[in-house]
Image (cartoon, rainbow, N blue to C red; front, side, top):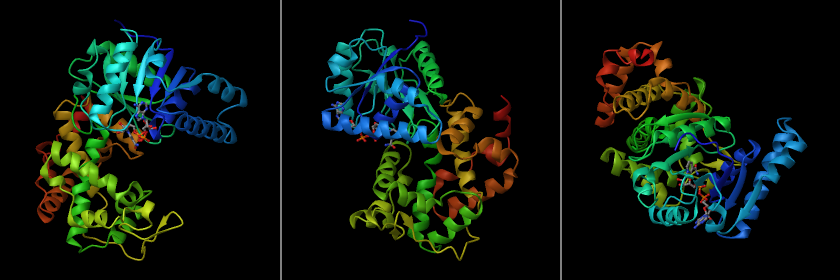
Length: 387
Ligand SMILES: NC(=O)c1ccc[n+]([C@@H]2O[C@H](COP(=O)([O-])OP(=O)(O)OC[C@H]3O[C@@H](n4cnc5c(N)ncnc54)[C@H](O)[C@@H]3O)[C@@H](O)[C@H]2O)c1
């Protein structure tokens, strides 16, 4: 098939992710058809895009002419069949439901050109399974953006079992043309790369909440004193404890039973105290801000602990050949999470201290999943960056 030059893109779903995906494409000069189930949703999505473009103008990052050009590149439709018939690339961003997505991909496959690239923005469904309903599944891949799409610089390009190298190369090119850092995910594994390496922090924070010996305020204050924009518990409330709960349920099924959402999070869920959106979660929230006692920190948890956990999982991701290189993991963490790359950060630190911290955390909180990998214990993970 060869690497394709993409001109016409169809985005299915105009919600939180879909309108962001459409926006970055029209700014980059692609002709976009954005599809949703009704015009009310589409109008709302177009308004959101317009307001983002106006914001860029106010920051002198876009001219009025560029805004007009971008909006001229956008059309909307409620018909999947009509809007994919001349598409070079179709990107799906509908809710995370396997059957819904399969129905949509079947329809796309029936109506799109046989050589059109078909991609899903799924965060957790199997690319290989989604591809089953598509004729010529070699042209199907994951194209995973981060929220908010217009601000987060990462896109993960994910192989299913049958995805061709040309399909991946085409999407890598497209991602780069959109101004994103594009990284390849070589295997269709839970969490792909960036969500996966950060996932083992969830059972740790959950276990700390359940144990109740350390106030979340003091850990958040510690992490903020060491450069974090938000502490881990504030972030959980910000994202929503229901979202954290569902993500934990997913990893419990796919990675390890240790992701069982603990008592603390489950009780908050039952009381509908979900964080910022309910005004109460781990913290009380007022005027969009968490009320955090910043007068104390803790020395039980150390500022390097999150790095140790993320690095350990990153080592596994390299060994499982999910990522092409440790360098890609660093680029992914920087562009997708606005966090320093774990390999290059840890390379400057004492690996024995990182390893001891993981031993201690795993014993104290009864989490065998975070016991250190041998390459962390002996420091040989450093050679991963040079490969
Ligand atoms: N929200 C995030 O932070 C995030 C991040 C990365 C990936 N994702 C993934 O992106 C996808 C979309 O998530 P979202 O947060 O944008 O969801 P969302 O609920 O905000 O938007 C989904 C949109 O799809 C539309 N839709 C539903 N059925 C449709 C159909 N048959 N045809 C056309 N449109 C249809 C809905 O009306 C809605 O507007 C999911 O797979 C999600 O896992 C989400």
